[in-house]
Structures are given as C-alpha cells and as structure tokens.
Image (cartoon, rainbow over all chains, first blue to last red):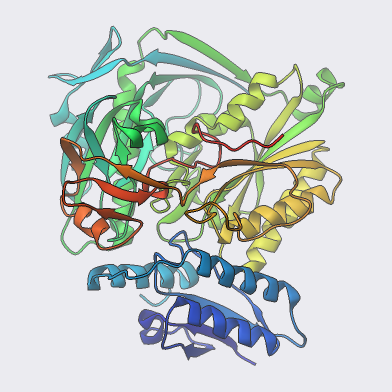
Length: 120
Length: 428
C-alpha cells in the first residue's frame, strides 16, 4: 500500500514526488484536515504533522499532509488531527485576499516543509 | 569550559570615515560595510541605516537580529561553520558590543512579518527597540530564489556583525562576565549536594524559512546532542528562521539566551547547571519520536534531577514540546516548559495545540493573538512595498493614516519562548 499525500497545494499537484498516491482536495486548509481525519478513521496514520510550518491556519490557505496505511485506528493520529482542526478553527480569519505572488510563496513554503527542494 | 564575555557598552552609533569604537560611541564606515556585503554576488544592493531607541522609526520586515562580537582571545571565531572555521567556541574571551545590534531586512517571501518600532506602544513588545540598530536592507539580484535570498541575507548579517565586532577587539570592556562549566564528573563532585539541572533547547528546524544552524549544520539533520552552555553564548547556534516574528529566536536571542544566563547565575549556589541538550522540531512524526526519545535518554544518561525545556514556534513544535516533557518526566526528572500562547484574540481558547498532564509547570511568554494598534511613524526602514502587503491581510491591517492594527505576533520577539521579553502570566 502506497503512502498518501493529501494536499490542496497546486504546486504539490504539479510536481508530485513519486511513489505516493496524491489526493488533491479542491478546497481550503480545513478541508484538507477534515479529509485527513476521515482517512485516520479508515485506518491511515499521520506521517507528517498537520500543523507543519509557522505560517498558521488563517495565515495560509495551503496544507499538505503525508499519511500511511495502518492496520488499526491510530489514536495518536486521531488526537493530533483533532487538535489541529480545533487550532485551525480557533485561528480562522475571514475575508483575506492574497495576491498571486503571495499565493505562490505560500505554496512554495508548504511544499518545501514536506518535500524539501525535492522536485523544484 | 570557561568563557569571559567582555561587554563594551555602546550608547550611540554614528556614521563616519572609519569603523571604530570609542567612548561608548560606535562609528560605522558605511561604504566599507557596503563593500563587504556586496561581495556576495546574490545581493544587488544594500541600504545601511541607523535606528536609535526613542526615534519615531519602524523597521520591517525584519529577518534576523545579531549582536556584534569579536573573539578577542582563545580558539574559534564568530559564527563557526557559517563564516568562521568550525573550531569549538565557548572558551577564551569574547568582546561584545553591548547595546548594538545588526538588523537584517529583506522581503524574502510576500507574507513575511517582523516589525520593530523604536518608540510608541509597539516598542514595549520588542527588546530591539532598546538597542542601537544598524539596519541592512538587502535587495536581491533579479530572479534569485527564496532559498538563495534567505541564505544571502542570513550571511550578510553575520558578516556585518563580525565586521562591526572587530571594532571592539582592542577596546577595554566596561565589564567582564565569567561563565564556567566543569567536566561532568568534576562538576558533580564539587556540587554534590546541589540538584543537577539541564536545559533542553528546542530549535526551529522545519524547513525553508524555518531553519536553525549549529556549527553550520542544518538543525533538522542532527540528532539531539550536548553542548557546553558557553558554546551557545559564543555563537554556535544561529538563526535561519524568517517567519513567526513574535516567537522566533533570532541569532541575538541565541547569543543572549536568558535561560542559560539565569541558570549560570544560580550555578554552584542553588543548582548544578550541567549543560545544554539541543534538539530539533521536524515535520515528520518519526523524527519527533526519535529526537524526543534521544533528549529523554540524554537527560537520564546525565543523571539530571530537573530540566527546563523551551520551544520555538507554535503548532507543530507543541507536539515536540509535549513529547519531550512527557518522556523526560517518565524518567523521573522534573520539567518546566517555556512556551507562548495562541489563545485567540479574547485569550479564551486552548493555548497550545498539544497538552499532557505531565506538563504541569509552564512559563508563558504571552498570547500572540493579542491585538495592538501601532501608530504611524515618521520613518520606515525596510522594503517600501511591504506595508501594502501587510494590508493585503496577513496578521495586520494598515490604516490610511499609516497606523497598523495587528496581533502582537507581527512584532519581533513579542512572545519570545526563551523569556527574552517582559510579558508573562502568573498564577499562584
């Protein structure tokens, strides 16, 4: 079973690392976290921290998470993803408009936190 | 290992024909400094400006702050592995231009924060409103990637701090402080009746714009290891961290870590300050497990009775912090954690993204979501288009009169998690 990359970051979608299955979420950061939580309930475990980066929920719109298949519910992953969803709701900020260049920078930071300079 | 820090007080800074330190005045030859910075082919231009406490000046977006120093006697040089050879530092004598700071500015990514107000209400939240600042506004060559720009700006700060520090090489210090850590068994024998205390120093190491270097090594590639406290005081750890202005540790913070300073104050009196265990804050959970296993193992191996753990950042590092705390406590070693809070603008939400009953002794640097209004300033040092970007909706909003309503997380050092600020919350 391949690892899964859950992301809403177009840069990850356009330059995906090989060897993992890409699940592109056409939505916001919280939608990515929710999708990851659903996968935890289906027996997947988090490999990366859902609050990666100092650019916090509410300050970025992108999130990439890597998950693996487990053979039982991973309660550590469940606690982590639930607390990340709670943090995202707490830090939710409405009405932000980001310029294209800022969006590109946010995509780059999200990409590099998970994959380094891997495919850039 | 014994280090003498000779502090030469800098009361003011001015431009002049020759860089020199005399009578509390640091004179800076801007053209020589500019020439040094422009040796890096990645840098197109640098503007050098001065900012003194009390001025109606705003510096933004701040990347790093560095204290100018020179190794006056003994082995090694400033910022080993970065701009000096990788000799072990932390012994001999280092001269410090105390009261001066190099501040690097560069808009490496579009959403960057980092504000230093030299006066007004924002000044109370940053220690760098009290230093005499030499600001480098660094313009990259066209087409330079964000990594290359970050590295160029980072190194420019170190080179400037070492260049200015040279002015203090022959100066007579106003005060000489002496810090010493004995070899493990010797120290334990001398202080047999005192509790053995260590410091677990968590370094921000998530990736681009979130990096810290130890003797030139990228911190995310280390496993936890032990340093003499004076190595940290002497420039072994430097910042490559550009985001999260309020709670990132600038290089200046690493050079002047108050936890290390205060543990030394009590060393030999109330406790035996055994040493510093450095560890990282990586994104992959397996790295977190490995590193926290190792910090706990090293704490037990050193026979520590108690540990202070500080973190850098929010969210992802909260997990490292709690893992470190839980695993060290499980060894029967008492811990105190040092953090800050993202408790929402009303301060009512959960402060950390992770928690555990073992984390029952906490020092906080404040709530980063607290709102502040920064009044307009007469002078802005930095990137001219930056304040427009902040209006676009990062953590602050620029008003038509030039004032900014923002969360205090935009201010450099506001909720610093090694306690290099004046905010805290107390419960008795």
